[in-house]
Length: 200
Image (cartoon, rainbow, N blue to C red; front, side):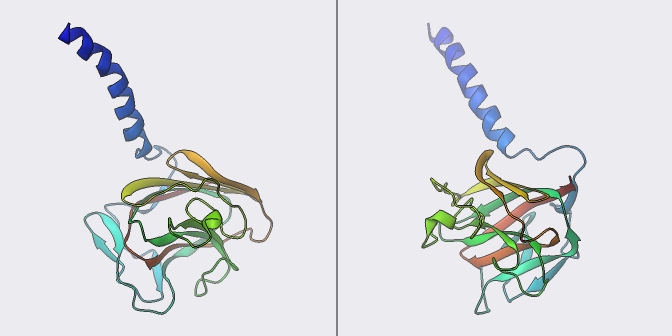
């Protein structure tokens, strides 16, 4: 009887395990690592003042010394691309990924597309999973206290965001067609364990 019960429980548990593991399994082919556990920060430029560093196989920041947010900005520009990132934040973290930024020294939602990760944003409609001032999120998912996958697709004027495999934002917008990419730290603790991209 006990053995039969264990057999019945094993299949659903295995399915749940596979689903959870798959969430953090990066794409296999055609991707370029902008950061992974074997990388350095040579491909990024620091804007603002935070203690960005390599720690335990991730890019991490948890201390902001400048008035505004701090960013790691890519040295190269991108046009149509897919991004796959693994990000850990605490419940109060203000972070995210900016794409198609027009000026590498001036990062913001007015000159980039800001894909937000901020569970406690005062206006939650542009909180975690949203594209600020472009595509709202409802209901807003929570990212704090766990590793998350963030997938971004920018093809021509179509923008799509997925958090942990679920589409959170989908929009058509013509403001920016290409530009720099930036990782943000505004508060709390943020860790990026993997940042991959590929052209589309």
